[in-house]
Image 1 (cartoon, helix red, strand yellow):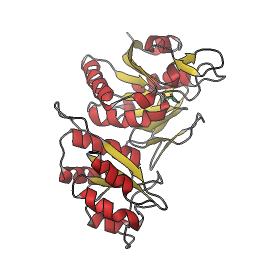
Image 2: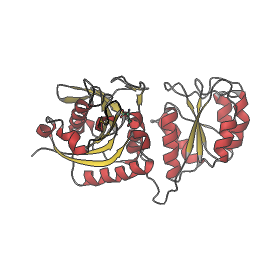
Image 3: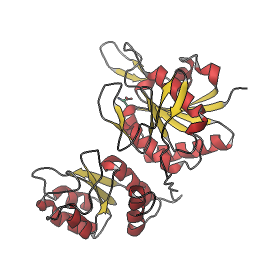
Image 4: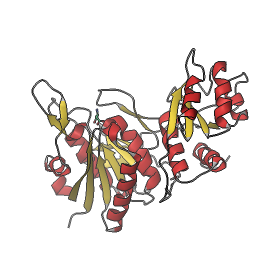
Length: 333
Ligand code: ASP
């Protein structure tokens, strides 16, 4: 008896094929077609394949992911050994981060996709799917949260980022990782991220909208005021460097932070936000004094998702600040 793996497909390049000549690719492959295209899978696992959604990945919603988390829980309760999710690479880091918060079980949940579509020479989808299933079967992959497998590497959902538009090596982990790799049909886990940071959404949660705005030369606070006026529930400012904004943004930030939670992340996408290095108007010390919350190493994309999920779970400002702190200091300050 082979171990059971559930594969859920959400769409993306891995599931695309040629449409009309001269046009690009579009969604065409079901989950079963993806699995059938990799005969080696039948030798290692008994796979049930579900076409859960069929979308270009920017169209995946938090509701889709909440529904997926419930379905993953159901399958794991039913005795499945591990889960593989295939989707578009454009937002795979976001989906994986959300599922990492919403699925609280130890069994591996592994995301994968493809950078090269099946009409191109050297499509990477089949190898990535094979490697994702191998990782989902790996005992060492239990208890370390959701994983993302592409290009022979295993990344933790909390660290992985897409940093190139087309290169098959588009995925990198920061500030730590990758956590492992695949070699000769075996997943090797070299690093175990600590802490799981589970979130439980409220059943009656209203839709939450969090804006992500990037600071830059010549920016004033107009977009912050517009976001507040448009009824956004929170704002993540991608500040320059370690957490700095132009002075011209400060008045709008001060207005907004009295009404909704504001988080500052770094637009650099690598490294941590500072807390106590610079002292000038708009510096991190000023932002903290005004009540903004530091995103730490999470970066703007993840900080926006974390804030959205926390608000959807009913968290207030103090709980939100505590949660971002817990990410920065998993072993306490
Ligand atoms: N380029 C994307 C991909 O890699 C398309 C998408 O994200 O759906 O799958």
